[in-house]
Image (tube, rainbow, N blue to C red; front, side, top):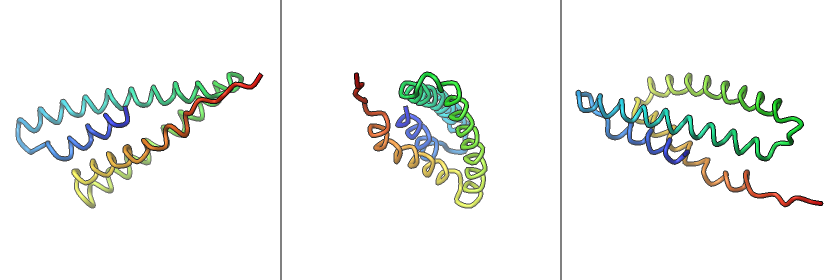
Length: 117
């Protein structure tokens, strides 16, 4: 899902032009981005809850949501500032690159743990 988020951001950065066809393409890509981002967030939360002790699952979920909301707030501010500084294309490319950079770390975070008896 993170790869799809990165792909939709990269496509927004490279394919959208300032005409009616570009507007339609932008709407389609923004919808794709919204669906893939929502799916990625849901899958990440589900994976995190799978490795969390059930006794603290509700607290862990609340903490995870708090960090996600703070991250989205910071991302909005950074996105606006970066867009003003470098332009929207480079902003989308930078955000897509961040998503791709996360991918190699996921197997280490979510590797199967052996249950001890």
